[in-house]
Amino acid sequence: MAELKMPELNSVIVAGNLTKDPVFRQTSNNTPVVNFHIAANRRYKDSNNQWQEDVCYVGVVAWNKLADSCRDRLKKGSAVLIDGELQSRTFKTEDGKNRTIVEIKAKRIQFLNKFNKSQNNGENNDVVAESDDSDYEDNSFDKFLTDEESDLMKDNK
Image 1 (tube, rainbow, N blue to C red):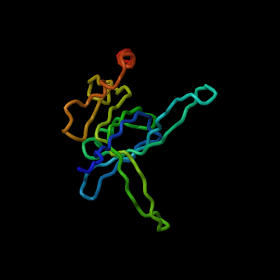
Image 2 (image 1 turned 90 degrees about the horizontal axis):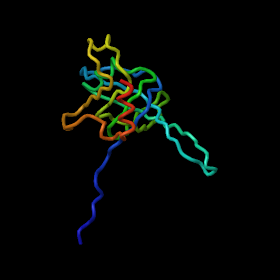
Image 3 (image 1 turned 90 degrees about the vertical axis):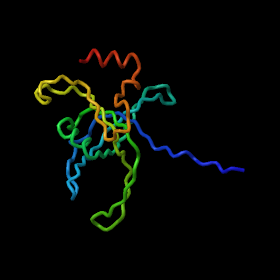
Image 4 (image 1 turned 45 degrees about the horizontal axis):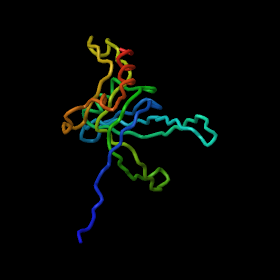
């Protein structure tokens, strides 16, 4: 009998707002990288049928051209939609202990805030999507929006 193999799937899509200004740096071989955290809200009804809200704080890392595109567009409070994969990394703290964190390695970022014309050489790009990989044919998240959300996006332009 053939063995069943679990499919290899590691995909995350999350929307939220930056909790702090992003941190930009370059690696020793001049590769651009940016790290930031977003707060993603979740609404649900509790056992008393009352609406409650829960906040999940998620770390994000973006590399190369995607990191560069974040430099001028992101700041504390910016709204983003992140498409990526979970990754974990371990490092030593100052007191010598190992610490492991799980974060999203962004493949695509859609910037959901309006972008000032003065910052964008006169072009009017209200919602901009940037991608790290050329593997994607369509880097628009519009296909994930309901008709009502699409109408709201059009009304905000």
